[in-house]
Every structure is written in structure tokens, then in C-alpha cells.
Image (tube, each protein chain N blue to C red):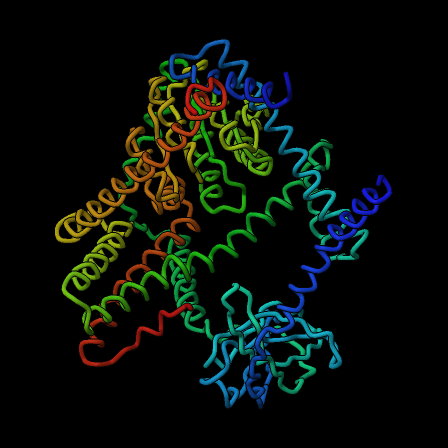
Length: 402
Length: 211
């Protein structure tokens, strides 16, 4: 009896172990009976050409649509290989009806082969799909080539040439001694007063050059303004403190402040620690400056350069410390905070104009006047283009940079 | 007590320490500030070391043979010359290179995006609106056109803002201020979400008062 029980038990175990295999077989059988899908006729006349006016990283591929494009094709898949015999890898796809694809992932000088697959993909009710595929002939080899000039940007070249010519003309005018007028910029006029206040109160001046590196034009403009601020501080014997968040900005700012102290004949008064690194971290930098401001209670604070979310934190702390504050940034989202919390704010381009306004240096002045000339030209262009449009002439492409 | 609990407590205490600045500058804030600055400075040092010196300079030049990167390595080495008194002037050359290259590269970017694309977009949109847009669309495009023109006039520095010119510039100032006001409100709301995030952390992850 025990043997019979053991035999029954073993038989049950074997059947249980075999069940998944049976069920797998049945699933496989079900998969095997997926409906056959008709393959569309392949695309023809595949052409691969170098993309014009690029840096050699793209190729244009075009083809004649499959005769079954409307009836069977769901998409075209672009296949690429470095050998005519493959393996070919799908690099992108287009929807049916489209006969063009730009491959932007190429390497200059490398030969490529392409073929296009017309795909008929049918979704099944069990959320799987079946496909019918037919492939075109292989085309190639084709090498992407880099162009020196982007001829579509000739209009940019023209406008830039006109602007540069105007800048050079005005620089020559300024150098020849001609008086060039620049309108008053309120925030900049207040620089001298702010530093004067710090001198009278015997307190520090803080100059915060933002959190951007030297590859940002706002930081470059800020360093120019720093030179002027440092010169007045050196003349007045007022302590200037410049906390920075980038090592390159620290080096450049130190050179600028050192030069300013030398120019007014006080090189010994300059101390390298006046321009000091804090941290690259945005909010670490803000936290450090907040602490310094509350402890040192500066009489004047300058925020010039590229600022982001830390702008209001800094300006609000300076305001609490009772400092006169002058800010300037080219970041549109931060200007409102500076407007709200500072005494004066240089809005956008005023930051760049400020250096020319302060220094009256011929190259800066000429540059500013040249840019004004370009602005006048652009204003004129707007009106002329709109007037021409009223007469049915559309010349807006002269400004197209797409 | 496992690591997650310790890190939650540390984060909560540091958050409260930084927030205590709202009351006034105090010792607790000073400690948190010093920790924040020290850790962030160290973090960025390590990041730059591995990203620039190791991954780009060492791997790029020595292992991948991309010798063009040596230019950057040489410029970087020149920056360090400022540590040696007499030849410290060499450090000015890479600085001059960076500033010059930046100005040149950014000139193209700003000129195409801030000047030409702006003019093209303004004129093209106005033409489209006149060509068959609805009334609201037309009004919207005209507002953009007037804003662009008057804003451009505000940033014209070669003429005093007086008379008709001053009046137009004044309109430009209004456009700027309305834009800044909208931007102010939008950004304040996004900052509020940051504050709410920290409060949620304190109440949920730390104090477990909110499930």
C-alpha cells in the first residue's frame, strides 16, 4: 500500500512539473498561429547625399515611396551600416507618405551604406503586433562632408558686417576726439554716490559678480564695471570685498581690481583676499554672502552679472542690512527681483552699456554707438518690411535664421 | 538607527538651521552655512577633477589619443603659472583667450537669436495675422509689434529720452514693467513650491505628521 502511495505521489509530482512545459507549448502554438501579414512592395530609387551647409555630421536620404504606400505601409525605417553586407541597424523612421530623412548621427569622413524598409505593422488584440517588411536596395558608400560656410546664413553675415562696420566707424570717431553722446543711465550715475556713502560710514563695499563663469558676456561686463568700482574704492580708501563662485572669475576679477589699485597709484593697498572664492554651488554661494552681509553690514552692494534663483535671496539680505544696492543682469527672470529689492537696477542691455558710459573709453563708446546704429537699422527694417508687405512683397526672409 | 534615519535627521536639522536665518544671523546658521559651503566646495572640486582632469584630459589625451585636447591642458597649466611670482604674467594669456573666444562665439548667438530672429518673428507674425488671423490674434500680434519697437527704442542710448522719442521710450518702459510683473508673480509661485517642498519634507519624512 505504501508503495502504491509513493508511486501515486511520484506520478503527481511528475505531472505537476510537466504542466508548465505543456502550457508553454500551447502558448508557443498560439504564437505560431499569429496571422500572416502581407509585406508591402519595397521603396525604390534610394538616394543618399551629403547634407549641405553643415558640420559634416549629417546625410540626407530620400526614396521613391512604395507602390503600396497608401494601402499597406505604416512606416519606413531607415537602416544604416558601415559595410554593404551589414549588419544594418535602424537609425530612425518616418511615417507613411514621407520620402525623406536626415541622419544627424554621422561622423565626418566615415563611409555609410543605407537601405529603406517599408513596414506593414498590424496590432493584434493581445497588444502584440505582427509585421510585414520589405527592404530596398543598398545604396552607398556615402561620406558626410563638413562645409566651411553655411550659405543659408549669408543674411546674418551681411547684417553682422554692417554692424561691425558701424562699430569700427564710431570707434575711429571716438578716437579722433569727437564727442559721442550717451544718455544718462540712472543706476550707473548712482555708483559714485553709493561708494561715497560707504566711505563716509567707514564700511565695506560688496561687489557680487554673479554665478556665471567667464564664458558669459554678463560676467565680462560685470568685470569691467568692477574695475571702475575698484578704482573709486581705491581712491577713497574704502574696503572692497568681492566674493566669487568661479575660479576663473576670481582670477580675472583679481587682475581687474589689482590694475584699478595700480592705476590710482595705490598698488600696496590691494590685497588678494579682497577677491576670494566661496563655492561653485549656487545656494552655498548665496548662503555665504548672506552671512557675510549680515556680519559686515556693508554700506553699498553691487550685483552685476548673471544671476538666477539666488538673486532675490541676496538682494533681500542686502536690503535688510541697510545697504544701498545697485544691480544689473541680463537674466530677464531675475530683473523683477532686483527691481523690487534694490535701489537701482540696470535692465538687460544697460549692463553692457554701463561699462562704456562709465569708462568713456573710445573702443567701448564706439562699440555702444555702433550697436545703436544696428538697432536703428533693425527698426527701419521692421517698418520697411511691413510697408512692402502691404504692397504684396514679402521680403521677411532677409531676417530668417532658421 | 539605520543610515536613512540619520540622513533624514541631518537634512532636517540643516534645513532648520538655514531657515533660522529668517529670524537673525545666529550660531546655528553659521554652523550650517560653514557645512554647506565646505561640502559644496569640496563636491565641486571632486566633480571638476574627475570630469575635466581625469575624464577629458587624461582619458581623452592618453587613452583615446585626442591630442587636440592638449590645447586645453596647456592653457590650464598656464593658469597655474600665477603661483610662481616672476612668471605669473603667463596666466593672463589663457584668460585673454577665454574672454576673446567667448565674446566671438556669443556675438553670433546673440546676433541671430536676440536680434534677427526677434525681428523676423515679429514681422512674420504680424504678416500672418494681417493675412487672415482672427481679431484677437491680430490684437495680440500688434501688441508684440508695439512692444518690440518701443522696447528697442528704450534701449537706444544715443539719444536723450525727451519729446516724442521719450514718450515712445516710456511706452517701452511700461511694456518692460508689465513683463517683469508677470515674471515676478510666476517666479514667486515657483519659489513657493520650493518652500512647500522643504516643509513637506519636514512634516512627512522627518516628523511623520503627514502620511
